[in-house]
Length: 96
Length: 418
Image (cartoon, rainbow over all chains, first blue to last red; front, side, top):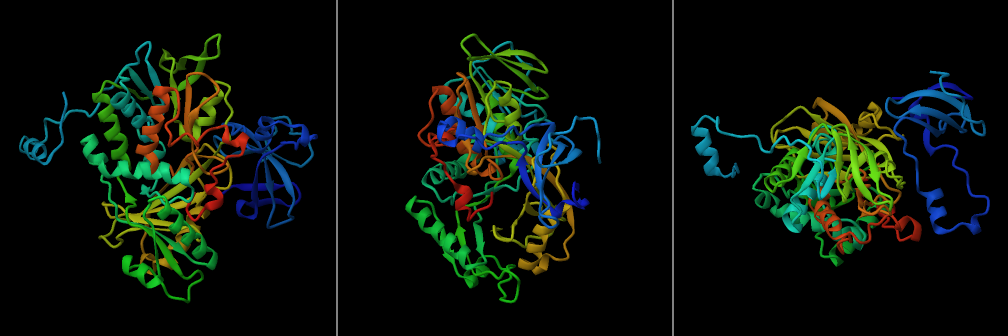
């Protein structure tokens, strides 16, 4: 089980959280002007990176808030946790 | 030299103390070029190479496998075979496969141990009953067998099942596909490998694709691999959880996410379990292998990962359900657990299609249920590669469906496990 560090509540077991998928996806500003390909890109296409990946988590059985994490998907080792809205931190700063 | 398997050959070679058996396929060295290359040496990939050679006259074909054949999800699944999917497109694809399973051992002259012992899907809530009955009727309209059982009938079919009313999720009924069952997972990979090899296909293990080269027109011209450059104008990618990684080498983005999916087996016991039982609602998937182990499928972990392992609480969750449904399993010890990386699409249906890159084809997105589709998937994918157009069965399973909205939404239909 992963140990996840909620930026608001601290270190907690994975079962307190729900997964939110790829982070930093931005809803298009002018939805009516998008063509089908751009919509498909926003709705369905994902980086699915093998390696360092920015993702969202929600502390569902805790504070309830969304936040972001950076994890290496080849090891499941977390590299950083940060609040939603913040830019991804420079890598190399291991927080757990 | 071709080794034909039969009862007679077993006796004959047995009398000779089994010293005359030969390896089932050659250890091929990569040639400079092929007419077609399949990336991924699991059941789907090896099967694709076999049907390319057998039915389409492509004998200059290579299968490139990063590890060893059948070492990925082919060797990691719980071998459940069924075709009772809701939508017409899915029913056609999976039933095509199920029909091929029925004669696969004879066709390949290799015992894949297909055992149509029946797959029973349990219903625990009123909603489950409605969904399962809808599936039963939809399946029958598509010529796929599926029948509704009351709890007593379910217990008659599977005596270890607990149908007491006092459990958390009592069994309220079940949908049974009698033609469904199990097969021996490794044998499927080995059988296809052996049959393809006999037709001249090169099976190249320990050969990882590291790049896809395209010509000035954008078409595929060669693969860069850990064993050198290999040219081909047709490349079929069947790389399961690593499909996103391979396709990114050609600049193709796919609607896939890769998740760990776990399974486990118990210590071996005498034959106690006559069929396959699935419960989507409380997440229990169980059958008994011929070795005697209970083969148990757990769920996917919550997060994307390429680690081929997951968390123990996922397995615990499944075992909780199994202990309640089958109280006599409570004292069994679990022997091994493992994970595989499954590529999941948003609608939980596969993609078997051409891509926007000429000469590049993809067969992916089987998610948590690809084993059952192995022969059918391989058969229609070989057709797609050979003719540069989809077979009518896989025509709906395009990448473009995520743009035009023609989804095959088995995720929403889910009376079944994904």
